[in-house]
Structure formats: C-alpha cells, structure tokens
Length: 412
Image (cartoon, rainbow, N blue to C red):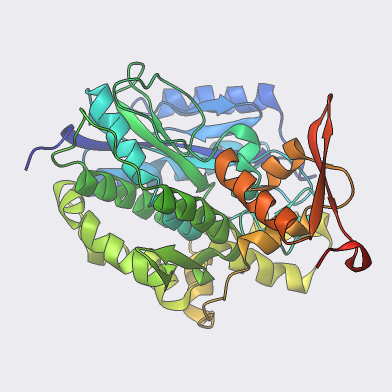
C-alpha cells in the first residue's frame, strides 16, 4: 500500500532542565555552553536550547538500535559534562514550583507532500489522547497538585501544545504549536508535541518509535481531495484528551461509540504500529516499558505522586525527584514494585466546566479551562443555562460572562 513516508525516519526535540545544586536553573549562558560542548563531542547531534532548557536532538534516525545507542550516548556525555559543575540533567514535564511546561516533541519523517501530511495530522487527532495518557509526567505545577497527571497538557503547555483543529488539505497553511504539527515546508516531518518531557530515557525511545509506527499505520492511501470529519468523534477526541491529562493510564475514553479503558486502546494501537515498527527494526515486544505501564496503568506521574506522599514540600520534592532520576533505571524499578491501578470512572465534562464557573467568569477564562472547541463549549454552556445552573451576561469589554446560580435562584 502507498505511504507518504520516503523513507520512515524519526527524531525528537526533548526538553530538559539543567539544575544547579540549589535546584535553580543553571541559566541560559551555561546551557548554551553545555549544548556547544555536546555538539562538538557528538558531531551527529543537533543539541540546542529552548529558553532556559537543554533540548536533546539526535538528528535523523533510521533504526531502532541507532536510536537506543545515540540516546544512551547523549545522556552519558551530557551528565558527565554537567557534572563537572555539579549540575543535574533532569527531564520532567513541569517543575513543582514553576509555570514553564517542558515537553518531549517527536518528529516522524521523511514526508514531502503537505496536503497528505495534513490529512494524516487530522487522523492523529484521535490518537493524541493515547500519547497524552502514556507520557503524562507533570502532576505538580505552579504549586498545584491533584487535579491532573499532566498539568502541562491541561494548560495546553502555555500554547505550545494546543488541541488541533481539523484542516482541509487544500486550504491548510503551516501553523505552529498544535498537538500534531506538519512542519513542511520548513522540515519534512510531522511533529507530535503533546508528550510531557519524559524522565525515563528508555521510555522516550519507545514512545518515539511508537509514534512513528502509528503514523505509518495511518499513512496509507490518504485522500487529499476531500475533507472528512465526524463532529461527534471530534467532540469526544477533545474530551478524551482532557481525560488523559486528568487520569493518565487510568482513563476511560469514549472510543468508537463506547466507553473503553485507554489501556485496551493502547493494545490495539500497538498492532496498528507494528508495520512501521518493523521498518525501523523494532517489534512490539521491544516496547518493554510501555508494556509494563499498560499492565499496571502506571505512569511517570504516578511515580512522582508516590514520592509526593512521602514529602509534600515542593522544593524538597524537586530535589528528591531530580536525584532519584539520575538513576536511568529508576522508573523501571518503580514499575516492578508498583501495584496495578484500577480504571477511573471519568468526571462528566459538563460538571468540569460548571466547576470552573463562579461569579462573572469570562468566556475567555472558561475557554482556557475547557478542552472543547468553541462550538462545542457553547453547546455545553447553553445546556447549563437551559438547566438553570448558570446565567449569562454580555459585557462590551469581556464578552460573555457566566455566573453560577444558587439553588434558591434556579428556575423550575
């Protein structure tokens, strides 16, 4: 069957903190110096920076073993160079006391046909929530804890990983920051941006080839002369993304018309990815970390929340987490000991949106907290108003403003 990948290749932009002994960032100047030293030491790498984060880039990868070897070499040398100044290299989706989101961005190539890549990106909308659930690693952010396993995705990574609209392949233009972004014409790749920065190096490699496998599995005989969209599926894809950020691998998705645990969907997704994995010299059985996570419904976020129960001080917790993850086997050891978690019955999306309404809540604020597209959010707000739970006022400066009604003021 025809595919748009010629050939199938992978790469990543993996953001990570460089921390001083005080757990503060080493700063842009020091991170630039470290990146330059790494590029000199590893000529095949494209290591750089993003704000005050080190960004690991291994170049174009064509083989699973090559990915493992270069990933291992990068971490070994990066830790060695950072250690000369007592710095720690530490990937994490968000630091407990800070706002900055930190991501793992996966590139899949090589693709040269922009309209066909847009069709594939549209199809990935359904599968993005699966990667969010698998890669969630920011259960603490801005001193918040408890509502999400990925605060980074819940906050759309500060507009750096936004829910993607569906694009007509003929009328689409290059854009930036969506969960699945077509990089053509600047780079011949499709970028998956929804993953939290992964603390486990092995898991990063597994998620990279899994993303490539899924995209390859979806890439056959794409129709670029028509625009296909199921409004109900689009609505539920948005809800599933929110559920993934909230519950991780304990999430239950609305999938093909029924409620289904994400772990069962991931097993099906592995089969979809099998052909692409084989092209990269990998097999489903090579994804050993993912297999354990699926079996136990455990994520990196659950590991961090376990550590949080031992010490709830966010500053000390960051030091503890950063120190523990200097052992590249730390997450694997945790998985071996961790219990099997149960699936969680999801909160109703109406109740979630209602919980964000107080007095005079602006539509812009509700849009930030809502996973829904504006059309779908408006339908939910109309239902809540019709049921007598909220009222709306129209402000010429702030637009619509919603207030929650007390029980004695509700109609009916």
